[in-house]
Image (cartoon, helix red, strand yellow):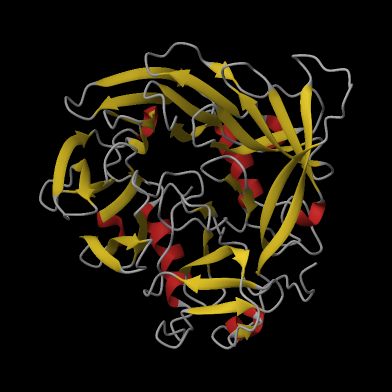
Length: 450
């Protein structure tokens, strides 16, 4: 994630403004993808609108609302009616209201804002249903806030000790483009060994609890969806150089590594919670770029599961449905770590166990499985420097993602079930997108769905 307000703003303008010719009024609100047979919906009307990072809570506890960001502020999308409303205007400054996450207890969006007079940053909440806003606590200058816990009593964040005087901070929900030199940037940042503090902040009193001090690069904080005292975080950097996925209690105890590597060039990351809070899932490659799994660890039993998938079905991010029965991925172009020649698809992944009857098993053995893939959307005209960041709706009927295939970003959704036969609005998604963004992306996918 970007560390500079200026850089983030420039990236957003490049993404949202470079394709201003793509008027939302002329982009269809729905069509059936010719290559997959699944119905696609354009869920947001604003050019430059964007959904949150794939593992950040974005949907209200009652399943009605989803938050998204647009150039004019923070919006709510009614998933039933597909109507939208502006919740927090930003006065034309995208950094004036920065989404943290949706609460897991109440129908509220937690967000950061800055007092125009004092420039002090505060954590606030806004109610999806009523629009009522409430200031909670001020945030010390230079502190970065990433997550809200399950009972909405704590926020978690980090700060760099030598930069704690910074008044602005980055937050999930803004532009999430991959830097063009991402690998080099991550190498430099890891080698810098900048002292950092991981902390929890009480949302009533403002009391700070230090959980961890380190010169490792700490990032991607994510509270458990069910346990308000359990936080997941990562040691960031080139994945083959870090033990990435960890959990820690909010009193600073039980700092636990979730996946211990046993092979050179083995990588594990882009971690996310199962919705019941029992399992941590992640992208596991054994080794990097050669063999691909979505792996999970049951936190109570330590039991591990690994679902194998083919190169063309690998994705930058994966996610899981609320009941754990379905997974989805957002694909990737040939420039990503899998170097997939035909990987630019939103893909549905149905897990299947391959544990044979009578097999020798042990509590320490991985539980083996495979994914049965089904392609949902042809993403050939999407530029994967913008990560699509997929998520399921609570009813499992739709996979939601963001795309720049039309020029500016929009939030789209695709139905999990195939469209009924005889639909009259069947279109090639890449050909439709090309009408609004004529230039070809760096990598293209011209194959039809399998």
